[in-house]
Length: 244
Image (tube, rainbow, N blue to C red; front, side, top):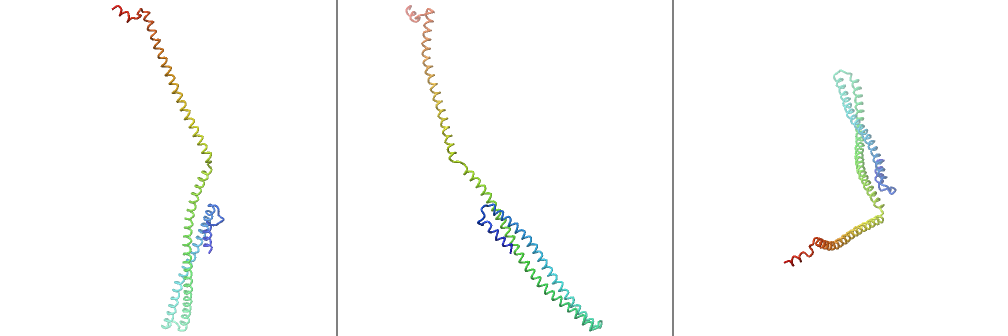
């Protein structure tokens, strides 16, 4: 059947050697599923038509069976009328015979209708089984398609990330980091150098201040002696001793 040939083709699509990209089997599977669904719709319609024929055949069996019984009853009634003298015996026989002929025609029709009913019901059962199988296959391929699409997304994202990582120039990055380290080291050394210069500058200032401090004390002593002379207090401590 065309349905199962399509199923086989879809099964081969993903493994076909001519397929190089993941998008191709996705498109092929999507188209295959659409084709299968169209076949499914047609199969369901055909099943409905076959079931309708089976129902019609069953109705014919019932109808023709009732007709056969009716013709047999009519033949019996004709014979009874002849026996009662209500109908000419020859005419009753003729009509009863025709009724029985009709009955046999109905019986033959019942037999044909039963054969048709059995045939249509067998066809319907086979088609129903195929339809269930087709529905199962469609569901299977739809699930496979979902999985395949998810795998495509993951692989695409992974590919993009890997591509970005591959595009990074590791040597230039390492070189840049080394230059940054060197610059930081230079800045740290320069900062330390300025610190030492500041420390040295403070030490010199301290020495200068210390030296100047001694000179100031000497100047202050000289100024004190000059003031004593001016006030007539020269050797003040020594004079007081002599007077005593």
